[in-house]
Length: 102
Image (cartoon, rainbow, N blue to C red; front, side, top):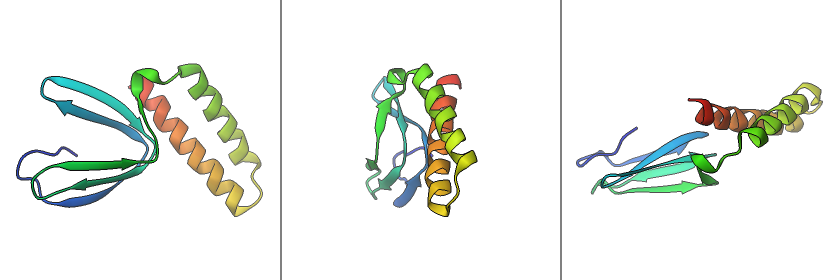
C-alpha cells in the first residue's frame, strides 16, 4: 500500500514484511513484525510497529536458525497455544527470510 497526497484516511493492520519509507530522495527499508498503520486525511501516515528493524541489519544465519527452531516447535506442539505461538514464529521468520532473499 502506498500513501500519496489525497489518500483516503485508513487504519490497516501490518503483517510481517518489508515497509519502504520514502523521505525526499532517501529510501529506507524496514522489516516490521506486526503493527498498525494510520493514514490521516492530510496523507500523513503513523506506523505503530511491535518491532521494526532496518532490513540490512537482519542476519541471514540467525533468521535461518530461528525459522528452523520455530518449524521444529510447530511440528512438536501439542496444545493449541503451543501451535499458535510456533506458527507466529514461523510466519515472522519466513517473512524475514523473504525480506533477505527478495
